[in-house]
Amino acid sequence: MGASQGTGCFSDSSKTATRLGGHRLRLREHINMKRVELLAKKGWRLAAVFIIFGVAGPEILVYAEGMALLEMIGAATFVFMYIVGAKLYVRNVWDWFFNFENRYHFFYPSFSMIRILPGMLYYSIPRRTIFYAVFFLLALFLLFGYRAG
Image (cartoon, rainbow, N blue to C red; front, top):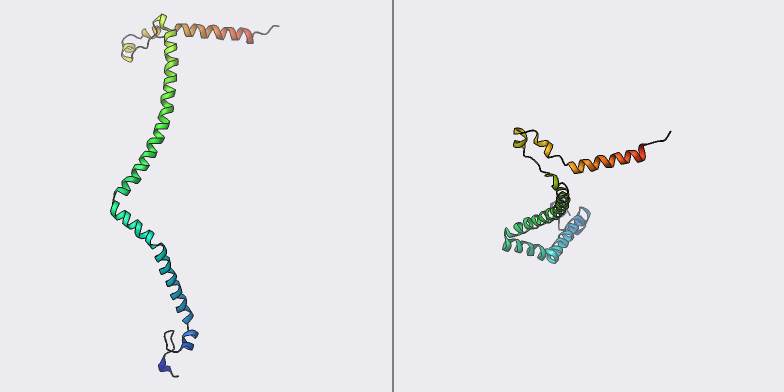
C-alpha cells in the first residue's frame, strides 16, 4: 500500500480509517441519527406550534395581552374594593359626626367665603366636640394627674 491510496479518514482501507479518526466519523453519524430520531418523535409538536401560529396569526399576541390586562384589572379591582369599603366606613363616621354637630349649624365654609369674611371660621368650629374633648381631658387630668401631698 502506497501513499497514493490515501491516508485520511475517508480512505478505502478500514485499518487506516480506524486509525486516523474513523471512530469520530461513526460518532457523528450516531449523533446525527439520534437528532433525526428526536426530530421524528418530537418534531410534530414543533410543527403543530408553527401550524397554530400560522393559522391563529396575531390573535395569539392579542390573547397574551388580554390575559395580562385581565390580571391587571383583577388586581386593580381588588384594591378598589378595599378603598371603597374604607370610604363607606369613613362616610358613616362623618355622617354621625355631622349629625352630632348639626344643632349648632356645623358647616365648612368655602375658601372664597373665608377670604371675604375670615370671621366665618368661628362658625365652622365644632363646638360640641371641642366642649366634650376639653371636658374629657380635664377629667383625665383630675383623675390621673392629681397627686396628694
